[in-house]
Length: 270
Image (cartoon, rainbow, N blue to C red; front, top):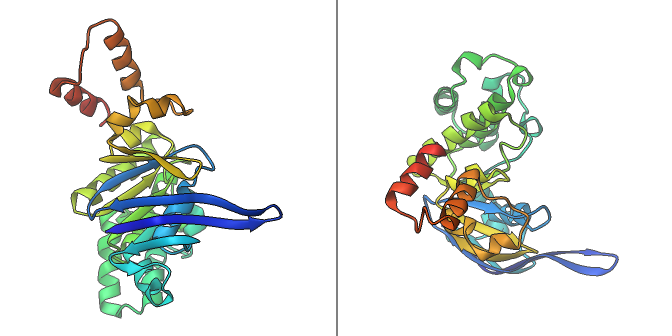
């Protein structure tokens, strides 16, 4: 579980202290699939970097699996518990082959050789890269590179996985490859925290947190967000299915969310 208590994060510039996050109170339970959204500069990336101690709180407290983030003695364990994947997979590639890249972090962790070989083999297979294991990472497609980046993190067996716009640089097919793996990991019990500007992806998550100016202004289901007053005050466009729903309601065709309607939404967004 990840908990924040009155979390604030700031940095100093020539004009003084600038707060990026302000009094964030949040609990993310084990196994949740959470999307974090907001315009550029709203504090999304800053927030998730606190979750694995890349950023440390300026004020307040953050706990990951009951470990206090600001305690230096906990940093090693927290960074093992919370895996992180960024937007550009090429910035995370370090190995000369796919196999070497997945093995790199395990070597640094001192994983015994026999166990490391097994983990590398199983992880590469799980992410559909078996036939690419001796390939140079830079020869892979965009979707394959991002799956490799995720595989390299997952080989360390984190409890929670954070993805900061992992599909932003991918075409629709590459995005689908990556998201399919996210849902598979979630179904197996992994906590997933996803930052995304693709609202179709957000719609598939269980919970949406909307940040504005470093503050949480909405925390609920994505369906509720896309019909909320908060979205009216943002520059976020709901997925096409919700725009259709509004038009149907205006014409009196659809009066409320029925189970049948939500089933249709689920089918369309798969």
